[in-house]
Amino acid sequence: MHRFYISPDDWNPRELTLGEGEAHHARDVLRLKQGDRVVVFNGRGREITAEILDFAKNEVRLRKLQENETPPLRCRITLGQAIPKGKNMDLIVQKAVEIGAAEIAPLISERTIVDLDSKEAEQKRAKWQQIAIEAAKQCGQNWLPAIHTPRKLKDFFGQQSSHDLRLIGSLQPDAIHLKQVLADYREQQGGRPARVLMMVGPEGDFTPAELSLAKSHGCQPITLGPIILRVETAAIYCLSVLSYELM
Image (tube, rainbow, N blue to C red):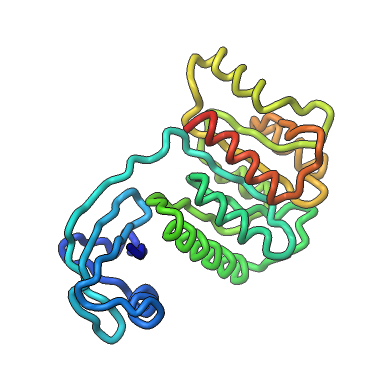
């Protein structure tokens, strides 16, 4: 069955309605008909199998058949990603949703090529949010990550919530293997971290000053192995390993 997104603010199991964008997709693209069954989700763990009742000009009315709840993943991972060049951030957002990231924080670093004013930053955030929704629809993910407006590192750390473990990918010689970091955490804390921050740099890595700033806020430098990875590969690698170990 086709999946559609209804925002938490518009989620009402007694009166389910697809808004303009999703209604257009159902009616004009997929050419669904009255009586067809679909699945709707709200990005907060709720999912409903529903039947199409009727079509209006800008909406589709649905009738609930069955409702399910998907529990959140055991570990809440925040990806702090320096914005790479081209469309690589689009790919990173898509894969982060599939792997199960809880938050995505796009970062403007000193080596980030793009420079955004406040309006452009919000436009980027809205675009990435839509990419996240489409990825969740395709992969069956019922939890959408919170995608933040792009910020510089100092602003990001100034507004960060608490994390049990903070990590930053690094090419510096003092970086240690992620496997060792997780083993040390389990030995010292007697369990797994529930909230993890994973920071990934841009092309050319974070600058020494940025790495120093991250360390001052509790980030442990980790190595991703002897091969220098592309930005998008590094992000997917880190999220995959953390998901495997912690979720």
